[in-house]
Length: 436
Image (cartoon, rainbow, N blue to C red; front, side, top):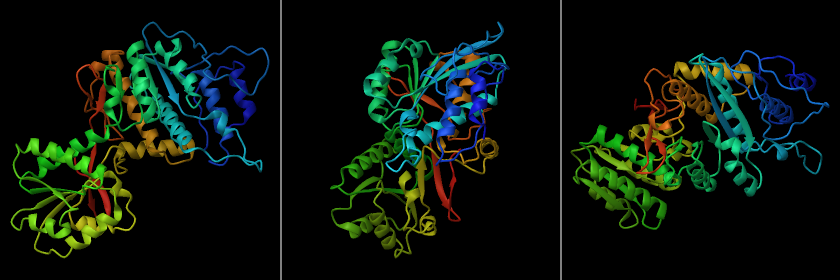
């Protein structure tokens, strides 16, 4: 752990490479944020040396959104600027409870901090030495008016790319501002792609819920088109009914309106389902529900049907079921899907995780992997397409540590949405990725 006085030496203009490495302690978060603020002030680039102007008086804090000019890049280098808008909750993290104890790390702050660390890790693993990436970091957890002003500020609008970790409720607003101000916006979280409407310069980096279901339906059609497809739902559960309609619409279209059945479990229960099963074909049973007790009941009843063959398809939430034995799911050839699956046996994942733990002494969260892939993808595309994200490609040479990045335009005059998920199958009590 680097001591605070040494951090202040950086602010006083010592020539050091701006690369902060620190250990992580969820109970003692204050030191980490001191390091973060130093990193914010130094605006890390891949220059060997970063020079900052010494302050007139010593201080142990810096203003938010501080921008410090770096040394001039070589004429042969292409400079690219990224702004990071992250919910670091700096003011909240420095507060104490009524007993004077430090507050625990807020979950949103932890995810944001991991993204920042993954971002730095990707910059260290440079792809093209002719590319100079500069960045600024902004704390977004303030009042709504401050966030609105930040999204419209000159410092943001001049960025080549803005990466924002915002709540679902803010994504549409931010995308509208990015469209009006004509800057490239990467939304780092969110499950509703409707925010991309009329925002052609916005990229939703994770697929929305509807897109994930459609991608899963396509996988099922491509791999189990000869099966008897049944979609189970309960009419008194609107979310299940809506998801069932979505799966049915996609599968029905792909199968040219042949042999896709939607079954209302609220009418007739299991006996109604049993009457629709096939003894001669495999039964592809799609159950778009997150109700663990409901799923358990169906599985127990299906276990008595020894003469039938099943392929079971469920939702990402099934991964976190606690009362269902994974071996039971494996027996039914169960498939689920995920937009945030990390394949830990992947050599690239192993290398990243090892280096991350070595630097920060903590296992990375998904946001760290996400940041690494995004920056690697951007670095590859900068040299070819500069800031024109409409031309960004996903080359097979990139070794992704997440699902990958394949942006597709959501609709006419809309932004882009990532179109990659992992389809997972239970095997030997674990989930393994089956789509490549």
